[in-house]
Amino acid sequence: MQAIDLLVFIDVQPGKRQAQLEAFARLEQQVLAEPGCLRYELLADVADEHKFVIVERWASEAALTAHENSAHMLASDAGNAAFRAKPATVLKLQQAI
Image 1: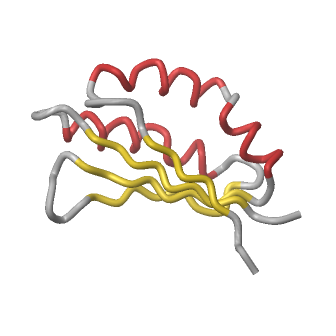
Image 2 (image 1 turned 180 degrees about the horizontal axis):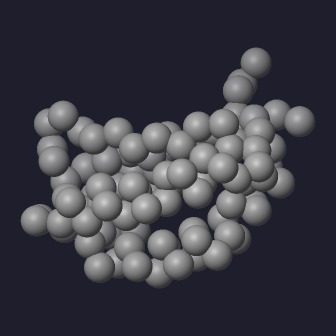
């Protein structure tokens, strides 16, 4: 089983930075407690306060799939349009060698 890494690139609407921070804070402990979650961290762009990256690491594809289908993530995804400028861009990665 190979770990899966995600980079989730997020752009928020002007004036909505705090909404993104609060949304992440509500999810952070739930996600970190999920089976197979090895990392879940929000990083802010130092040059643009409206840009963020969530860095995730999952022990397996199955753990990631369970995360994506969890009730708390489905509810969170439904509410993101209220403060996000556009849908997130997700880069899904595995170790190459």
